[in-house]
Image 1 (cartoon, rainbow, N blue to C red):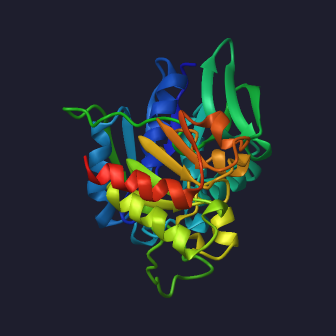
Image 2 (cartoon, rainbow, N blue to C red):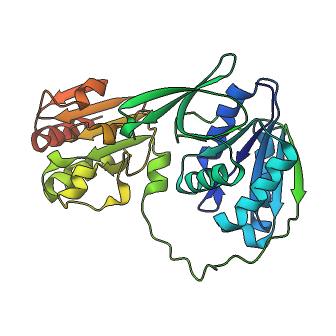
Length: 320
């Protein structure tokens, strides 16, 4: 695959979204000797972000600079992405499997009549391109052979971003596009702390499931997270029993994480939850049901009640 690949960059909390760097890693596996282009949108505040991408494995960074692009509104971005496709004629367009990425990829697929393959976790080059994607809530891995050109959306955490290069590799091209006034305008942003950024970057996560039963059980997980200097996460089951809100939920309807250690406390291991932790380097499961599916995916397992196991575990860790 020696054609061009265009990656649509995203930001999160005014910083480059990690999925952009993960897309670059996926593109490197696809591209062969082809050119990797990263498309960045923003105003003056995004100039440093665009410059920093020159220290990644991108051959070119196209910086679309206009004050109306800083909010990454789909209505403004789509025409510019389409113009880039027409000018560059890429073999593949890569988006992150995020809220914005899914919205843009689907709309662009319909607008320019290109096929879309979503939720990709692996790629393999044959005569064409063989991609593996998660379907049916992660219960099934589907392998699809694609012909160029097409649109691909990359599952978050499926690739690990490499470290920053010592020297600049690519070149930056600043473009000043004309952007029409959108049909709706942003009036106000209200910042709400959700913990998602902490989860996305956490090295250690202690997560509570339905098995914590009540607020006392949830507090034990909070104490464990503090002891191991980690971040607390929750499953949908813990949210449903009312011991916590969904701000730190992990899984299909929550965040995808990739910690070095994931401690599942009272989590049964439903596939909807497991799809969010498949990239964890180590999973430790604590559950009183020896037949719980979580044990089939865990590196270490403790069969026992969280109300008994967690205080003992904390006591031992405090002695270290």
